[in-house]
Length: 310
Ligand SMILES: [Zn+2]
Image (cartoon, rainbow, N blue to C red):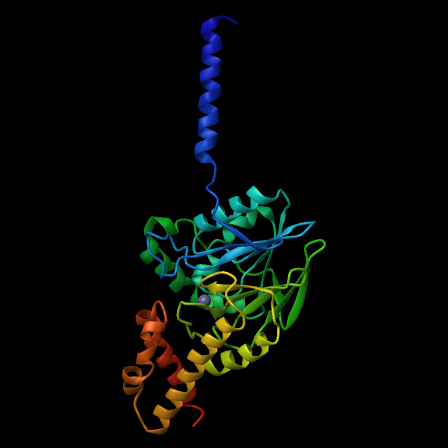
């Protein structure tokens, strides 16, 4: 080989190497909050082009045999970044992709894991809930995120949980549980028995205002049962990871209990839904992020639910 062709060869190798590097997926930032439990902290915001829809806490749990993903983020791109974060931690296969509920910020990264051929796991009521909203969710995603939404799609569960079920990751058992309609009608929690880590999905909001898209009464019932789980570590759906327990649950419960109490009082007084919206929970404003976006909607949802009690 002469000098010129040797240099050509080196240049070619450099070209291939740099192309490979530029294609390498950026990994999502994750924190190991308990042994084998890695969580990503989403932005405390609604989905915007700036945050790329990365607004929910998501993550993964590693056993000796395989990995379970718990929620996949708001876009295909975020799901790919989560997959890269897994690959930076372990070469083990992804055998389960669990969705804690139907909301776009938790499910739209699912397709990033399709080639891993995992079981997609969710509540028995998840598939129907997703199907009913699929068109609206996709339209909203593209409107809110533009190009960042590219390739995102709903991947329905292939294995459903109704009540409780367990998943074996090898040396690590996850107990999955579905709940009475609360945040949504398809809420599911994941409990890692080995480390005592509870992944609540959006049954627990910390700092970000809870969003009622199911039932305020059901949610209060569920909170009483979640309290008894006494986890050592907690990954809430939104807000700081591993928040103080049970104080974080207490704060959410107080908001929802006050909401239910005040809406019931308004209905008893014969107030209209608009009067209730204009007067209830105004003092909550300083206590929660995203109050302006979700609080009035919560009053409306609670009113629609509770007027049938009277
Ligand atoms: Zn949600």
